[in-house]
Amino acid sequence: MKRLMRGLLTCSVLALMSGLTLAEDKPAEPTPAKAAPAPTCLAGTWSGTWLSHHNGHDGPIEARFVKLCDDQYRVHFEGRFWGLFPFAYDVTLDVTDRKDGVTYMSGSSSLGLLFGTFTYNAEVTESEFVASYCSKDDHGVFSMARCTRCCCE
Image (cartoon, rainbow, N blue to C red; front, side, top):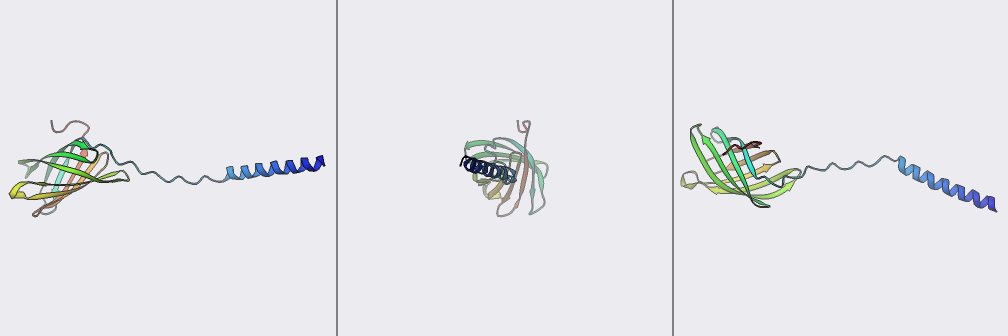
């Protein structure tokens, strides 16, 4: 009887050990890749170019982002038109979504009777700001990178 009990106990232990061994030998299931978190703070200075898709005009542009709250920034844009004429204006951009390492923003600003109201839709990463703009007479894009040194002061 002792032999039978010892045999059953040995078989049980071996069965348990082989089950554990089989579980350990199974390849681990791949962990889904995590998307980079969308930037949480865009405050600071950005610099790049603007391009009108309507008439082909382009030029340099700089922006200073000031965080108003978690989902809203006041942005001061400064640039040049025709290489000679400076322009500057402010717009409030609202965060509309954050996913896969990108912050999506939108906003609008009135630039007076001569230029009208411009609307903006932007995609922002930690290092890149790309915004399409549109008004009654123009549409185009701003492409900027985060400055590592101050550009506007």
